[in-house]
Length: 428
Image (cartoon, rainbow, N blue to C red; front, side):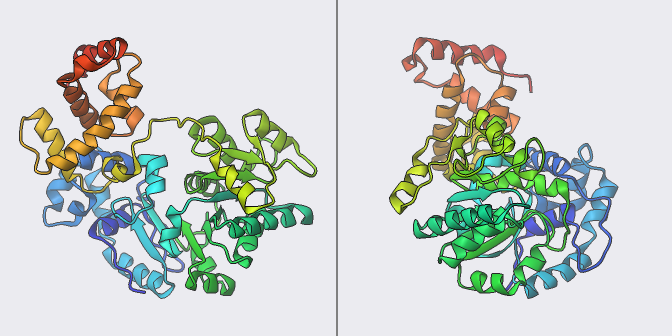
């Protein structure tokens, strides 16, 4: 395998990745996820991208980012080119690939659900296409009895028979049991690891599954990174984002990664329906999740009844999602935004878009989402937050909507809300 990193991905790795080549000390200068998110937004607002930070114009771009990240700190991070070349060789020897939010190959499901909170970098090994296949997430506690292990295996086997990908976290206990059941039955498996990706891909049993396309292992953390409780908690949202439905087989009450991930999904994120095991001995944790809105698992025994699980209506998401096909260009992040920039220029400055078809298509989707939001007038900053786009982008869309020639065709309340945007557009 040849590991070819895009210029944007190389720059992002230099900014956020520890680049651990075996033993080594992690740089204290690394940008945190929050810091990188702010930098990515700023770069997009000034019509730049991460690769520009290592271009011949790097000094000028760094200076333009001084208000977000100190220039000296940026220089130290971006000067780690030799360390990056070393770690790339290490990853290549282990067939580990790397994608960033700036790459077209980055999982659209993660961008759709997490937007600019999607990991800046994703490491993996195996068939990347499995990350777009959805499927059933199965999660649970690490320390469980044999009955729960057998139960998780049986769910994995049924998922394989139904040709649905099994998504889990790769931790011992329920996660590994469900993944093993699916793999042994010839199914497809996606493991979202919180640590030790490098070790996992070298496992002999995993290697065979990786080579024949049954398994993909991914992690938002350095392949050599060890276990960290915080990382394990944070990666839970990726498991849910990559699936179409989720089953919690076991959970402690108000503690542990399984509990926190399920509660976050039920209370805030609401990416997919969450089920809890409904047979055998119950637990305080499962009972509490049911009270929070988790559904009893219907215990399907056939392929047809298993398929019905995925017909359950997904909870209303916390934010209005734009379509997957357009989100790659609209999510706050790192990818070049030519069509969006052209559209903003046309609206704000009066220029002619270089790609009018793309711009109009984007606005058509955005228009529907904004109209759905406008049960009352909203400021452009509120619309930006709801849609997960930049403030200038939201403002441009609202200006276009206010000036829309079809405004009179809207019903009364919405027409009033849209008209009221004239007084609510925030100052530039």
